[in-house]
Length: 66
Ligand SMILES: [Zn+2]
Image (cartoon, rainbow, N blue to C red; front, top):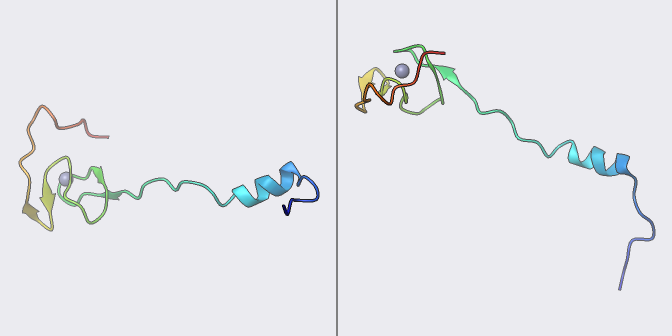
């Protein structure tokens, strides 16, 4: 069977793997409550989207303002 002639270096492996990384999640400021939230999604803190209330958020589950 075909087989690699020699082992490639750690450097070469690391150079290839520099592209394998996870980007941090994109967050925007909610225009209603000013908390950080994912864009194009209903705000998990106040339940608003596009100026309208979509979800009812219970006071207990609401997280503290960061
Ligand atoms: Zn909000």
